[in-house]
Image (cartoon, rainbow, N blue to C red; front, side):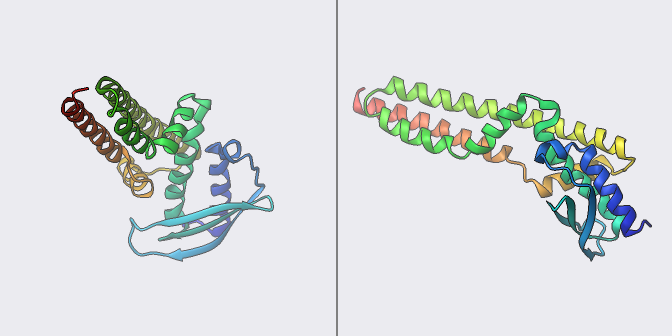
Length: 205
């Protein structure tokens, strides 16, 4: 069992090992567990953190400090993976995060409008939309693999151990998988393609 002070030192080290200093462009010199709640279930964990006045402030709900540290590392690894090694993929993932809910809406309006004038145009717009969705699904799968690699690297640096099954489980519970949503969007766009075809034939375009 480690003390609060030892836990704070480890958490600050994880912050820098996870490269969150470059992610947030903030460089705390100390860490402080401001809030701690004891839980009984080994799978029950929650946390928050922020940086104020050159200090990493942490809130943690766990069995104990030692139990909470690996799960806290998962949160940090997940965050820093977005800009890991300045991978250009990160730019695409940001685009995905900002646009994956907007693209289907835009396509709905485009298809509805263009199908009034050109069946071929509506088909092309739908095919473009389906291609974009498939591309984003591939990006998401690659990003998930990259996050797991980052977990292994981070835990190797800090000497922290957490079974990979728990890493995946905890990461998924904290950050819901949106591949299913994206696939659903792709299905919606495919349906729009069928509708636009039907409209085109009915209008004789």
